[in-house]
Length: 191
Length: 264
Image (tube, rainbow over all chains, first blue to last red; front, side, top):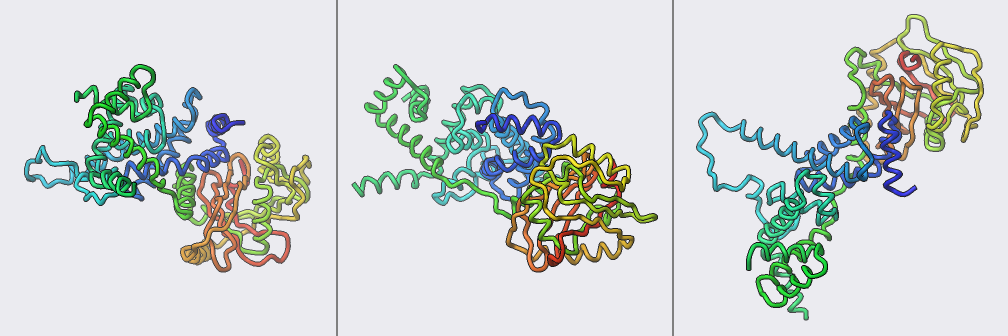
């Protein structure tokens, strides 16, 4: 049985409440889910919570899995949406935590995570771009998903996915600035 | 360079173009410095991201994740006293238990010298289950049937089924404890020991006391000192910790189990 078929079989069993099957699914995919969550949430504990929530959703909604897409794709979708939901909640909580008579928000101000100092680190740069672009770039360039798969996962049109990936990369290039240029120069120097 | 050219170059750098579009993009990269820079940026970022090492769960986090998820899946246990939520293997041959769960896994069919009694007036029950009662999880129907017999408090010898991987000389004694304070004290002490642990030990597969008492062993449980292992289980939907400790003196393990776990 190939990997996707094995996953489908495990999902079918998990849908009947088989915890052994569920545990095996966790074993097979928890690293991937955590990696996605870590890159989207940027905080280990938050990523852990998102991973936990993803697998709880997997178990509770296993009976809704149609089997049309790969289980991994379904998990990517659940993990990504869970992270995006948590991030939105975090943002709301931050907004609600503002004092009653706070200054008007500066519409030109960047989001808090964009204030992160860029230290020539791809992870830091990744953390510093808006989450929609980050999600697209992570799924595309780190996890290697196709445009169609990402459109399915992110529930947007393929054109929107492409746009987010491309804009996300451009933002990363801006953030990385020197890092992107330096290796190129070093290679030239080496040559 | 126009925006649509930028996107064309980005698609080209993403290996999304074929045929004429790819040729047109390649031509732009050759002739236009901005296009070449755009192409290089996309390639560079893709490469950096592809090479970025994936964040990984530590073994401790992995264990914690499974515990928290499996505990969360259990129904609310508000009506069950805390001391009944756990059962404890404190005597005898925890090592035999570990060997058993690694090698075989799941309690399913009950064969051999099985007995079940419930102490009158006690919150906990006593049973002895022969080791050859352990069968793979697939044997659900036999397991349910066996649990039905067990649930009736039947102390008679149960029908023996074919048992794959059976034959280990293990007995599980589910002991009677009528002193919740003592049990809590022991658990607290063991829990304190557990906090000092760092090294994981492989314990795997599931211990299943029947349809209403499914329990799952964690793959890797940290432990140290006298504790040979900790089993995280769910009994009647109640999160349960099983501490395996003591020296192997005879092929049996004593456990303290809430009576609900042995009824359906």
